[in-house]
Image 1 (cartoon, rainbow, N blue to C red):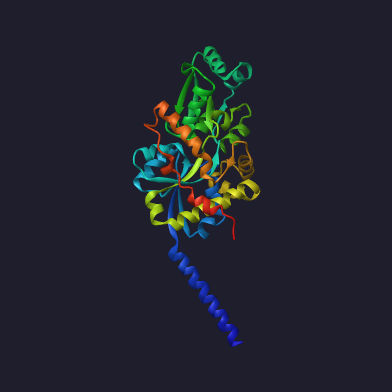
Image 2: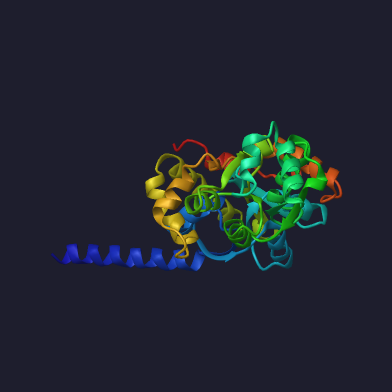
Length: 340
């Protein structure tokens, strides 16, 4: 009996020591994130305990756009960036050491038209003609909302307008605003169309079915690079094991999103819902055609080069940045190895 009690006491002491050691070794990580479905893997990794298991103690700060988040990254107030790839290229061109360690989603951005603009796309022979007819009838250009210049939403919208649809610039007024403001303006009829992502796509169409999907992410910018996870160089150099743990957790969370959306939806709703939507809506957004999850950063390298080239052509990037310094796929490659 005494030996059994001694064994139990030893086990309890070992468990306590292990918990204390884990707490002492936990790495605080400040994560900046844009509240979109593309960021879902980090929410699932957090809510399901993947980050904690990796020895991370996360705090989250929400931003309205990637360019706004870059300022926080540059000033050292966040360690991890979860947003679009385009602002990171701009950041590196300005000497900010930031490294993409994982992707989360591709081809997120879509274009929708509001109730007044949508019928023109139904009747016109092409997209450019629809916008021309709208201006002729309404006596003003179509007001299209997106995020600030340099962001992925802004870049993909411009690419679709000028390179794909071949629209006349006189027929369009591009209006930069935050994500929440874009959604509200679209529902209020303050803008005629917008480039948006999930869950905004599911939300606006459920509230007003007259808002129509006009162009998918693949149409707007083929293989469009979406949300990524990047870390500051200072954090990565100081905490390589923590970065590996982060990527390990993201790979697992991405698999959950792809294979078990019912399980993943509550975690994402807790992060994004804010009382505005519910789990069922988030579940639909996770399985939407505009939600294509992948953790592999290698799949967006070529598309990132193409996006950089386009940003240079429209003046939001001074010059293309070598992606060898921007992408660090080694963490993903290790995380994706089969368990032995």
